[in-house]
Length: 130
Image (cartoon, rainbow, N blue to C red; front, top):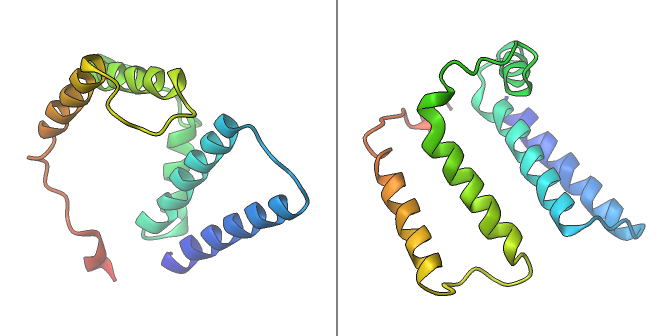
């Protein structure tokens, strides 16, 4: 599966280079969204042990197995954080990330504190599979 993941990333880079050579330019937000989506999809193949498992995960990610929002109440803080980060990114997309005042500093501090809640989750080291 690692080879398939590498192949997909190579194809993605080739498509990007060919698009640049022929003058295909996308709006920055669309290029960012496509790159983010592509990386999320291809990392499934890196993590999955077999292709059927990867395809099952992709079906679940795309909602083809149904949308189960029963546990969405437990995700309200994560959803709020994603919305907050989206606003921060969209407000000033051309400027590099820097502290713009106490509001930005407070948002960054809250994100840091929020991330501390997930340090106690133990996941196996991914590269032991190789």
